[in-house]
Image (cartoon, rainbow, N blue to C red; front, top):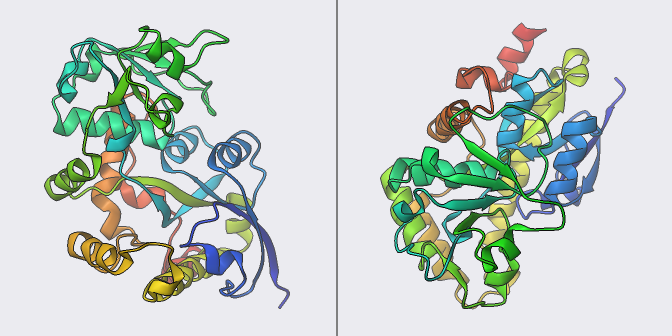
Length: 323
């Protein structure tokens, strides 16, 4: 039987490193792994479907699926991140708590990125923020065009301007941005974090909600799944083995340039249990349901799919029945 040759585009994460380095290989597949940053990788897959397999924004995947793009996800989620530390306010403009964003002007990168959706949804569900009252300013064009919900007041940043400078110049009161803004990195006194102690707020929110935000999933082109449905199982198994190898490596503090790595690992396990990054459907159902609900409310997807329908059958028995 000839081996299947596939290209995987992904980030250079520790969870994926065993796969990238060839320590772990998917059965029956010769995998060419290409690492690149998220914006380029996502844009190339969403606009041109350049890769056989791709780590992709979960939120953009849901939009792409809703519009009939020809790839499907498997329930692997190699990148998750809390986002309280990426919510920014302009100082001395009356914002003391999250609900003070109501009626204000808030900058975004795009509506369609995972970070922005999780921040908006979290603020709405847990901090009393009325998304309908806010004027949203988007800096970049959407990778996949869509019509936002009619209740969303969406504006485009003028050519030559950017969210960070608009915040400093008093043209915005807040920003929910996927990366740390330059003004925050430089310690500008004109801006500050909406949550002064993000980690404390994130732990508290997790304990109340049970949600560890999913940023990315893994998608496979339909043409590959039609002719080689077993490849979904092989890739899922390889991704899980890579994660297991990463966890094994994390047991040795020599592998980290961190002073209190043992204590950090103990704290993480106390809060999340032994596997904060589960690759399956059931352990992620609550987070996936939240993402689908928010996207539907905000007009990014026309239909509200069942969670089971979002992913290609992940088990060998289901694959065999699929064939």
